[in-house]
Length: 120
Image (cartoon, rainbow, N blue to C red; front, side):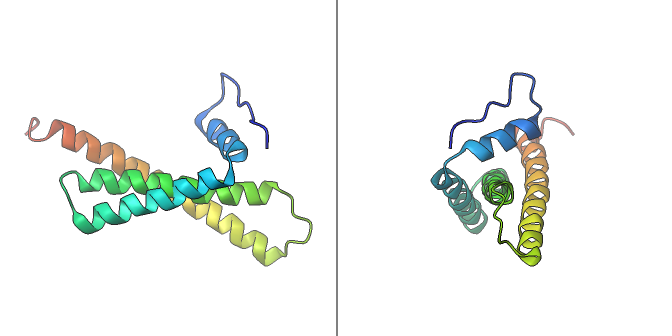
């Protein structure tokens, strides 16, 4: 699949969609599996900054899931049943929602870690 150019004035959703449609499937699998592994290990081990690591891993994993679902829905498979299409739409929407929540958690946890006890 050849790269899709989102253009210099593309919004973040347009850029992410173009990247998802032009990424190789193994790259999306790496995003999904790698992100889930980072999130799982950080949640299990709970090192310093584990919330930031868990949120970042979840963002990558959910991007991978969303991108796979987006690619599948854009492929225009002619023999897909309505139930399968609904399942892909639910997967895409759920991954986008969870990814946005993880991004918000990453943002606020990072700010909290950076500011520490500076603000009382």
